[in-house]
Length: 190
Image: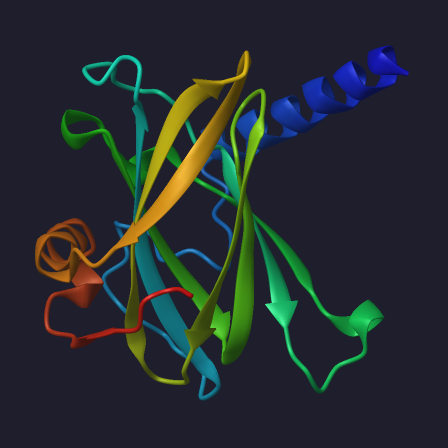
């Protein structure tokens, strides 16, 4: 059984790496090199950042490398089987090495979504936080500070959501030219 799981993880890793190295962009990502923003009438953008740290080794960099994230549509008016799941690759350009910070910019249809997990190369982190996407709006959902630590012999993590809009807004506007003259509204995850 473990052998099949390892094989599945290996194939998933190969798929993720091949997509990211080919530059295959997800339609749900706002890419840094884009100069125009084409939003459909029912679409909006949500921005958030993630920083990872090892509480036992606070100076350690590159603690967790995000390869993708998993989202689930949360819509009270849809049957459970009709709710969409999204597997969104995280291109290397989202990572700011000097600050050990990941920036995420997602273009989605209006609605409420659950950020289910951040997926690394060998593991995934359960996040389970909700955020809203409003049509025509660019929302800042906050910064997730994720700290790893060992508890009773097992590695685990805790997530703190922080409002760093002033700091992150500058990074997003500098990194994504299409956001330069746009208003970003604060709407922190919950």
